[in-house]
Length: 241
Image (cartoon, rainbow, N blue to C red; front, top):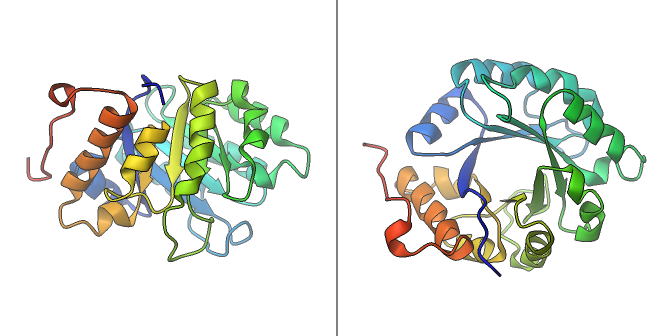
């Protein structure tokens, strides 16, 4: 894969304000918020009010709102209230599976844009990447799930990297995000394929040193994805700094 110029960013998934503060202190670049409605996936998490509260605590940090909801169009206006201190800090990422069968994918994309948010489009492992590529010229972020949404205890699905490579070949400047089972032990495959936005949960929270885990994953993307030499990599840091 040819080197890309997209920023290498690590976004731990968070559930509350305390977690946000911890991961930002450890060097996270953005915050990944899993919004679950109990329909698209079995679990229920939080909604726009909590996202807005989190935004008040961190007005300048990018949020990626991962909408694991069966009707993402119903959440757009509420989530848009948490856009932050300047444009481009909030990405509204919804699953293609929830809209394509109902024929309103384009409508949701247009609505997100009309509310001033970046558009993210995600696909689950069983969904062909070609369905996402139909909208490639209209989105800011492509999310390739590397586990099945809503199911615990899964391992990183390396065979999904063919989807990442396909998107990167066609859209060299697009943000490509991977989510599910990503940690220092699996990051190289995602980095080599061309992913530049890395969502990590247990890979950060279960690490003995959260800051080192985040730094390791970022440096992998910089080296294997961006083609940087060792001397140009972001220095390792400690959350005690």
